[in-house]
Length: 253
Image (cartoon, rainbow, N blue to C red; front, side, top):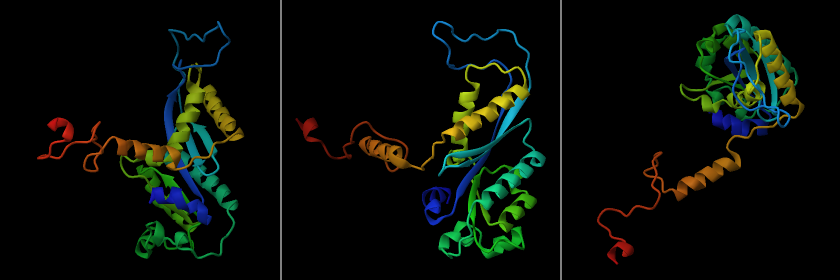
């Protein structure tokens, strides 16, 4: 269902956003590459004081590449839910009301049949206005947050256990975090959070849209075919195997 959302929802005017929380990250000397003048490599102290930790809330729109992020010290529901509601309300204001009754805008299409909607909330929006992909943390199933989302036309699509690779917010987080942390030494959590905020602004100055699958997926598919996949599993052989009971012309020779 999540893959279907990535592939088709935007084409029918249904925005797809993704959400995740990253961290904690420590305010200590961080390993990694950094840009420095030639002959003056970055050095890090052997002794340091731990300056606390920071986390990173992320709301990502793959189709445009835009990131809405907030550095925080903790990601409890009391912190996450108010931020999410504010950001999602802002996103909804940018989505024009559609009069089209396409099947993609029905709740049932995205896994919310009428009986489930009645169980979750008594007053859902008439149709789906946007999709939100997020992981299956217990806090994301909070009745208050789920009801709030459905009442505003936001269908929540949860990644399955072990399915974090389906959440593209994690992909953009890795890029931004690496830019911010690699080779740096932040002395405090506040300094680290300022850097995370700057990383988001830097990304949004020239955002990169993400596409699900794309040319790389097709190349991987062709590569798997060349490796002679065995029985449709992840195993493969470097060459085609001769079925039992048959001898190739080479072996016969």
